[in-house]
Structure formats: C-alpha cells, structure tokens
Length: 329
Ligand code: MLT
Image (cartoon, rainbow, N blue to C red; front, side, top):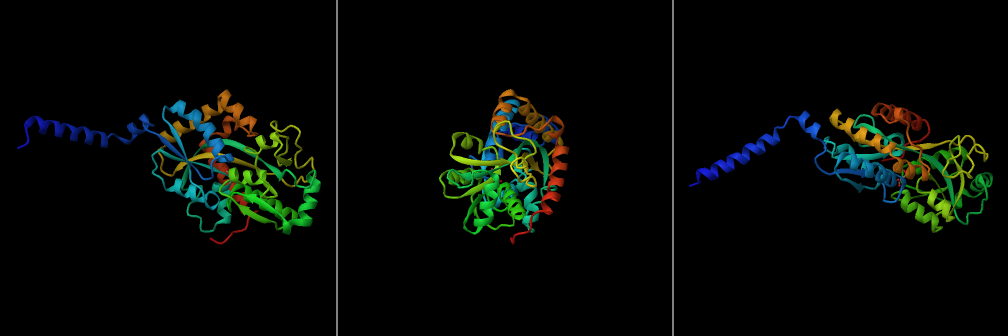
C-alpha cells in the first residue's frame, strides 16, 4: 500500500506539474525566453545568411540570456529551410533567418511554394541590407564591367555561373542580369554561396552575382575579381569598386536583405522582445563594425520594425513577380 507521505509527495509533484502546465500564456510570454532558441538558416554555413545570422544572434543571446543555436537547413534555394521555419511551433523558440530570396523571389519562382512568406510568418525585423556584387574567378579574362558584359554576350553558352539554388538571391540576381543582357549561361546550383564561393575561388565556375558579405574577404585577399557593386552608391567596404552605373550598366541595380521571422501565431509579446533584442544588436558598436566591414547596410531604426519588414516583404514579392518566371515544381 502506498504510504501517506509518498502519496503526498506524488500529489504534490502532480499539482506542481499541473500548475506549470497551466501557467497563463501571457505569464509564459513575460518569462520568455526560458530555453535555447533555434534559428534556421536556409543555406550552408559560411554564406551571407549564415554569417549575418551568427553576428546578430551572437549579440541577441547576451540580451535575452539564452543561447541561440544556428541550424543550417539547406535545399531548394532556401525554401526547404524556410518551409520548416513556417511549420515550427509558434512559441518563439524556432526562428528563421530569411532573405530576399526565401521571403520574396521564391514566390513567383515556385507556384506551389509550401509557405506564404507574408501570411505563414510574422516579421521580427530586418537584420541587414546586402548589396549585390558582380564577381569573376581570379583568371576570368574581362578586366572591367564593360568587358565582362561583352564577354558574357559573346561566350554565354560556354560559361558557368554559380548560384545558391532556384529561389536564392544569387539565382534571382543572376536571372535579372541574364534577362538584361539577353544571355543564357549554364547555372550551377550550390546549397549556398559559401560553397559557391569556394568553387569560384577554386576556378571551377566562371562568375557569380551575389550578396557582398562573403565576397569582401576574398576580394581583399585577391582570390577573385570584382566588377561592380549594384547599388547607386559605392560601398564603404570596397571604396575602389565602381557602381554598375559608373561602370556602364546603370540599369542593373539590386540590393538584397536578411531578416528574422517567426512562425505565424507567435505571441506579440515574444515578437516585441525579439525585435528589441535585434535592434539592440544593430546598435552595438562591435556588431556594427563587423557588419560594415563585410559591406552590409545597417537598417535605420524605422526600417527595423516588424511593420516595416512586413511592408518590405509585400513590396519585394510584387517587385520580383514582375521580373522572374516560374520554374516547374
Ligand atoms: C543566396 O544566394 O541566396 C545566398 O547568398 C545564400 C547563402 O546565404 O548562402
């Protein structure tokens, strides 16, 4: 027979467990976060999305007092990881570092995309703007952008351009360039532009059009060529690199972005805490220095709000829908 003392202990534990289970949701949100937070990066380690995620969450974990774990979930131009992020529990413990590809350009590219970036996520905030740069392997013959354009037009059927899969920023930025130049080079997909950059440095692919972030160290080391930055102004991290307008291709203008998202239904109090921690990270001198050294553009306070990110996603889906044609899926 069970002793009274043991019965009391068992009941006591059950009552405690029951009490914990019935802590009102609002109180749980007030205590958030009480455990590790996973951030899905939909591309390989070492690429722009991964690097930005690690820089900003490295500071957010100091603010929130919990470890942020980066999980690289690769495939299908970032849409595999983003789909996983959309389906995660809406409790603030699984976030997604999305970008212009996963949360905008993928919509027109994949008519059967399994998530809607605008309605299956709640925006937390923009982490970084990432200008696009036009890059070539070290011994790529063209010396400047005008020669690059002429060379691509003359040889596109023999050239390989690297990208991070259909739906990625590099794919979409490349497609825009191809359509403006009227060319059809062979695209070589990688699980991210971390590995694509390795192939460019190794000379296995001829050129790449991608976010500036992981290109800057290679450009400075002289392991790849850079032809132009596709923004109206030069980038402070690469002051000697001309803009596309200066170098003779003014119509080619692209800036991408990286941003944090939570699954739809995430409590507003949790989103507000995450947004405040992200904004605090973007005000930190160390974080700013690292992002700026890699060519990122730090969002101004008004651009960091969930509302601003929601508007950006809507506008970017519209913008890329005019540019990109669906692929079958
Ligand atoms: C892209 O092309 O979408 C990105 O550069 C992917 C990445 O972060 O590797």
